[in-house]
Length: 200
Image 1 (spheres, rainbow, N blue to C red):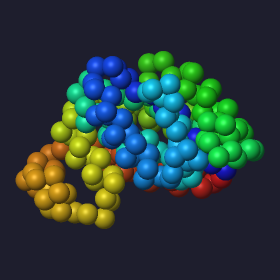
Image 2: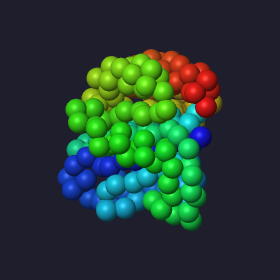
Image 3: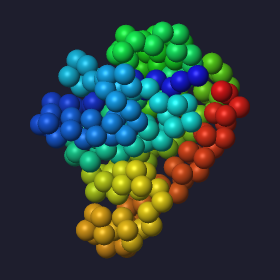
Image 4: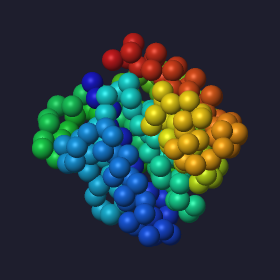
């Protein structure tokens, strides 16, 4: 089983492409190499392959990375399933994970993040939780997004270390994490990881 994340940048023309593009490439590089594990195509669309366990964290990290730019956001569809054919380029590989990701992406209307797996029960429960989480995530401001990005990237660092890295005060970091709903998102990630094990 693999997870395929299909995404595109919202308002990609509102910001100079080199800004969000470099940020997107940097975050995708954390999960593998281009073009086997990820590819950017049509200018502002992309696909990433990750293990099912790390798919939701990857989605949160991509969202935090892109929302560092005032006018931008990202649509993300996580498809979980099999990979029947592995090409040197991810966009030429196929299997049910790719089909699920594509179908999920087409169904993204009001929401910017959803999951489609072989289990309808899992999808229903998780997507309901994600819709609630997005009430906060879609409102992340650039400063909050930067704090969340670093905290998700370096989960072992404490707030003081992140404060030093970002040249902010520890209270700034604490407030940013609270504003961004970090504790609640961590619980959601833990729940997702526990449930995905029984699915895979």
